[in-house]
Image (cartoon, rainbow, N blue to C red):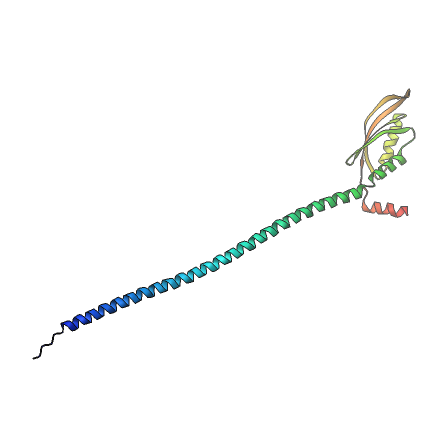
Length: 193
């Protein structure tokens, strides 16, 4: 029988397997590192893309905040202009009020009564004057009460006084002003033409 020594063959096979294992292990490590690098690159790309989207959104939000601030400023200006417009319209509506007041006072003033002062506070007018007698003051009050422009005449005070060595009645009278309606103003303007 022939004897064959298989020990070197087995050792070579082990050596080959060990080398294959090392090569395969190295290849797996390189492949794992390549896969990790690829995954890292992909995630970094996603993160960079999301950061660029976030930066774009922040820039747009800043623009919108500036526009919102501008809109608020414009709304404040509009409100201020509307308030001015209302004041002007109010003044336009009441600009003839003084003329109406003096016209009514002149047309309704009885003989023997004259005014010392006329003071208006909002819709309230205070008249201070002299009359020959208390009856003339009563006549003035009745006459003012009939006016569509004046309302609620009320005597505050009536007292005896001496003016130029004559005995007169000094009075203080309060009356309210009633703003004419648009129909009354149009009727007044139509009647004057």
